[in-house]
Image: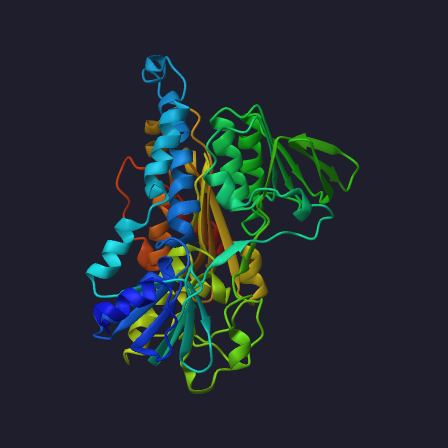
Length: 490
């Protein structure tokens, strides 16, 4: 619902308003999930206001997905060229760090959100700048930068999509030392000479490789679990650690940080095994926490600070009449941008009466780690499939062992791996490692979501010579294993 120009001017100047402005839907958070919920609600003919205290576009646009890939891409392209005889001889220089950082800045819109604001306004969504908090049933209070408060009333639903922030593990001295999170390392203006990364998850390994390739002399990753990317198949961490060590990155696994201290302009990290690491910058990449501390949840009887539990329509549990929805990182179902957008699209429809429950975010969420080699996965790992009680078969094949990989150059390697539910004859999980495998994972996603049987997949013929021929080899591995088992006397 549009407001009178004089009323709008008063709100912008920080004046306090008392009468609530009414909309069908009010969204808190204009990151990718919030934007999509608003977009689909508008597309269904509903009136929408969206509240944002920072930049429209959220974490992904300015401090995560997009700028981080810009930091990684140049080194990946250079490595790809160096694999190809005839091309590698043409490479006479090094990476242009200034140009890479300029491109990163462009990807982040130079931390200006006007383009995304124009898109919102252009499709009819009203943007309300300020910090939004729930203030009772279907009510949101927005406090602007000058302290002015505006009250928004939702006739149908409130959607909360505040996102998440870097989580700090309880290491003595860590918070006091004022380390970087994902925002600071992704937006850094200069290359750190000595970089320590606490955490070997996606952010940790991507940023370690990015800044090492850009010229950091020393990069150390400390991961308390026994391997990098511990949520993936075990071979992933092993292969990635080997690749990072080949680049000169020190990878320490199975050891936790015991204490962090600031020493002058640098950091000193003591490990539980007694080792001491010194660095100029320290990045905490040890997971995410939902931004629900100051969301006003207590005004509707919910506990602040944790993830919001939702049903498959993203309705927050414990809220009478089901008017509150939570999408994206804040509900903890799948902390990746594309699945938050998936949830949000369904919510925009659900509020309009077009109900389609979400399930892919729990069973077929794809993810790509943009290191070199890349890691791409979707669905269940072998361990999770077995924990779910499935009759599991796994098969693997070398990503670099097909003709298409040979055309990419020398030294292409990696692993392609499928998890199969034998009782249903369908794939329930897939993992690929190797150059550019992020572009292969969607085929696996379609197979899982569509419950395409192994028997039917034989008729999906990969083009030759492409890396996707590895799908044929994986199916042959299944065929061979089944025939061998059938030949064994009972």
